[in-house]
Length: 220
Image (cartoon, rainbow, N blue to C red; front, side, top):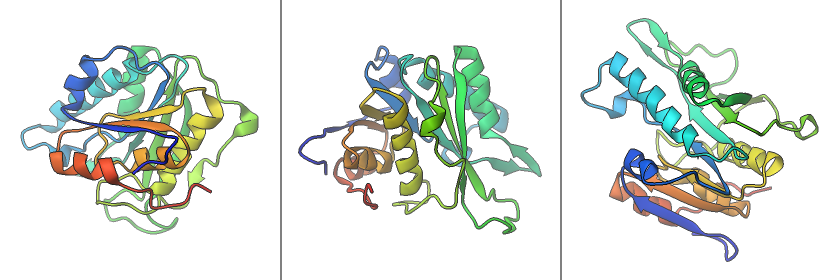
């Protein structure tokens, strides 16, 4: 559901295929959370890291120079070794010529809590070629909680609000694109803030959910 002043378009498609069919997404910024290794049945860890870096580069390459690309990612641990998705995003950005212009931490558990191998935080990483955020319009570097989610892999609504507000504050882009939109939380929040939204989702069930999702939090 959208307000009368905004639009939301959901494509039931493979994100990589859809992105490769597009040019630069003029007038848009991108907010997304790329799939975890648990969502793939055949990838080895090394194959997943290669896929992740290549896909992040593909996403970055479709954002206009005056837009922001924001990744919401949670690290994973395999056989006692941490896989830092922030590092993988930065590796992709170095290959595409994008600068890391903001790095926020979203708490998944209360500070001081022991995670027992599960990260107590997520990264909110913001990249751009031309945008350098105005320091007078800064946002907190640590968000105490991600907010409500509609499913276990969803991006919390408070994290969505932070990402969208950063785009409003620092760019003239007024359409949010999420190529891995899931239930469409960031798209619903974008509409709530008066932004247009475009999502891509491989699962038909989730795509249908994304078409009708109403923001779980008020915009204020």
